[in-house]
Image (cartoon, rainbow, N blue to C red):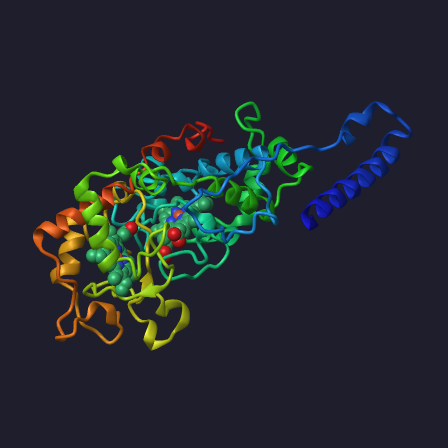
Length: 369
Ligand code: HEC
Ligand code: HEC
């Protein structure tokens, strides 16, 4: 309700301003009346999947509209957001990989530089209370400032992006002032609106139609029997961290990866507390068949390697999660070869083809350059 009031106020304010300006410029010309036409964006219907909890993202603060989502999508796929005008959000977040970067442990940013961490999937962001592997950001609306301004990713600054967007010359291909006006009531282009539009688009990236979801909805045939067995093994051994329907409890854990040369200390980067060293956000596992390579540094190419890690290669350290220490003091999760196979077949039931191929999330094939 508040938001509605705010937008009405903005419009009234804008109308008053426009009228004064017009009066000053043209006297009492009435021809310009079209300028004050009521702004009516089309609300976008967004339904929570029945097996999902309530979203964390505050949709009443940024109500989804067709115009807002369309603008967000155009920005997401536009290379104008980077310093070199060569990298878009979609360069590192590809739809066919659930908006992760398939095949890349690290992603290429501007001037061929590598990102510090593996590009995570962007899906079901409306349920994410914390962003990035180290949880450095708490609000989806603030996420894009990071890649845009990160010197090895897009290397640009947001105010410069705004200036470039204002000047995008080929208005036939993309007319940002018109799109901002359709989305927010006036043609004003600013960073808050840009971030809100990007969030609106990202909030529409909902993946909830995998065979697993169909099984949960009551279709017993959606999973094969070995997948059902895999689910049981998964629930017993993995679901304390990869919990619920999003397959993460969004906590920060050390799952026993051996520190590599880069020595990424994870959550410690944010809190500077020793207890957080080498802890990373538990990732959700939806579309896991398409988001390889795995872990914050993309060290594992296959799910077999991931399962081998949990069963035999968990490294003991001060912050290793106690769940991964057995009663006899050994580390890891005891799983036979057969059990690992079953868990993997289950994990693949989280792949959601419709999401990966959803045309409404695909590139509008628009680039300002
Ligand atoms: C050069 C590659 C690259 C580009 C370009 C890029 N990202 Fe990312 N993105 C990443 C990496 C790497 C991470 C993980 C960073 C970390 O955890 O430290 C990430 C993380 C994210 C996350 C958090 C996901 C989660 O689960 O926590 C979101 C959301 C996101 N990016 C959206 C965007 C948007 C929107 C853009 C464009 C404005 C963008 N990214 C551009 C590589 C990129
Ligand atoms: C103690 C909590 C915990 C348990 C138990 C756990 N995981 Fe994880 N898992 C994590 C964390 C944390 C990461 C990310 C670690 C990193 O990148 O440094 C992760 C990463 C993964 C990944 C990679 C995902 C990606 O997008 O890169 C897969 C796959 C995975 N786990 C599967 C499993 C399976 C299967 C089990 C049970 C056999 C399991 N996990 C048990 C915490 C846990």
